[in-house]
Image 1: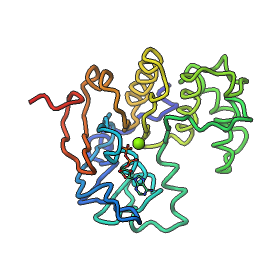
Image 2 (image 1 turned 180 degrees about the vertical axis):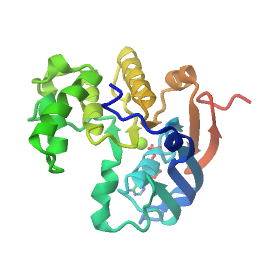
Image 3 (image 1 turned 45 degrees about the vertical axis):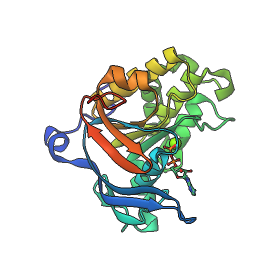
Image 4 (image 1 turned 45 degrees about the horizontal axis):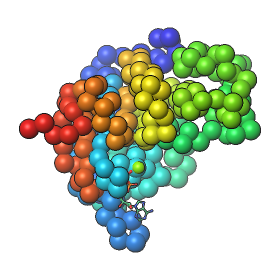
Length: 245
Ligand SMILES: Nc1ncnc2c1ncn2[C@@H]1O[C@H](COP(=O)(O)OP(=O)(O)O)[C@@H](O)[C@H]1O
Ligand SMILES: [Mg+2]
């Protein structure tokens, strides 16, 4: 599995920041200030929870990172690119460095598990030989070999999310971003998804997960970024969901 998600060189993991925000802010066109003055650095290899109540700005934070939105204030840098200076033609290259999964899975309903994963490679022009080699590796990583030929409607929620995770990893991204990935899943399935994200992180991929699942955050004791009303109110290593002091 180490060859699948390339273990990143030690120097890379120790020194490179995958995400940097400097005084970053996002005001929506209607005047709503969704994020203000966010300063954060996430080094390669980190596992980070992004927490906060509904409306706190978690999804906006993520939309800035994948450049669905451009910061209206300050600077956002991802995988070595200043997103404010990125030209339109450079956005696909950025997106290949980022894997993303959502609460609602967003699978293609008429394609099988195998095809959902393979299609993500196909659209970037990957040769069919590479696709045939890579898809089974990814399905094995997420434990879905037996479900390769199933359609999304034939899968449980957890299996659908595993498919989405496999798809997010097709380009061996520097970072995997998950926006409330367990929001539609029962507690046991949620834990299985977390274990998978931890495994992926241990193989060298930086993971950022937005969640308001307190139980999971409290049990994992990872770095926690807490947003409240668009402000980053806490950035703490080995932390709980709520401030403990
Ligand atoms: N397109 C938009 N236009 C205006 N306001 C928005 C838009 N999207 C989100 N918001 C507002 O920005 C704030 C942050 O939203 P969001 O980032 O989705 O929070 P979270 O993911 O933490 O629930 C909320 O008050 C939300 O209503
Ligand atoms: Mg959200």
